[in-house]
Length: 487
Image (tube, rainbow, N blue to C red):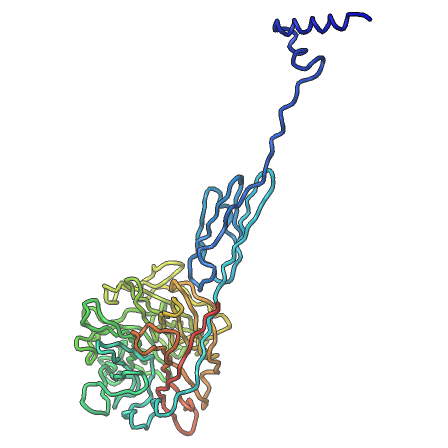
């Protein structure tokens, strides 16, 4: 047997020890270099993705938060787009919405979803209360009042727990005036006006009732309607925000027509007398189009029936605005809003209308944005009135439309839910029953704040009267309400 293979092996070993023939030493012969082990690429990981609230009401801001690793791109749907480099974002859904987070890398894409549910809110109205608890014209407790309420009732809670109310209608010999009542339960009412006994007398009246030429141009020449009464910043005076009506163009009284603005008056004697002019009083809100100088077809152009609520240092005012349109006697109205600081007492010049996403337009003559999109659901919205619901932890805006009674909810006073009809009724029909000018109250709570249940105070006529053989007056009626929120 030849020894050549053994000698060859010994030579190779010696060469390796000497630091040569490296390729032979490393590969054991004539083999190629070993490639490095492959790098494993893994998809991104979404460790968490959640919403700060699973169930909300319209206007609520919700925080979407996430923890993601290994993502080259990170996006949210619903029009949000890239969120790479962030761990959260705020959203304000107006409907039940599912948000999907997508994380991508060269290894693929992973997703995770979170749903924010918009709660459903409904109002149920119980049957009309018994006749002894309803303010009928001709009843002993009606005190001879006629055509009341012709505006929203304005109420204020007293230190003893009772309530003062300012109600508009035919007060004594004055049409479109205001008197003061009191109640402890919103069921039975007493006169609390300037005379000791009925009949009630006005505590505020039109400035000239369309008679005296010198005052025909006054914004409240023909009508004053109390809608909201709040305490002034000094804690002792009262402020009344009211509808001021004028029926003249030039010096000519118009038939079936009235131009409306909103004004503020002050009382220093707990609402028994009111100062309508001077420092801190006068017109505060008007439409973006001025009072017409010639006859128009619109029956009640301008801003009317204002409802106010104090929130976070501001007075927020909601109102109906009816443009001047010669071609439409019943021109489509819209719901708009304005606000002023509480410290200003809502004086003229302090109000700014909500316009294009901000409180930027002056209250007198400025532009306004429609704040509740009523569309075809509720046509010609009027008689707007706000309230805070402690049960919903949200605001409720009530209004009337051609189709009946509606409400909408919000948590930010700007973004409102789709209106809901909770009392269907065809309005404005001659000789047909009609109910309007409603407010919600919960006995024991301050006006402007309600609970889950309470009373609806509203005007009712058994027939509208126009075109009928006899005229049925407005009467104050009472029903009970209940809110139900699901889930």
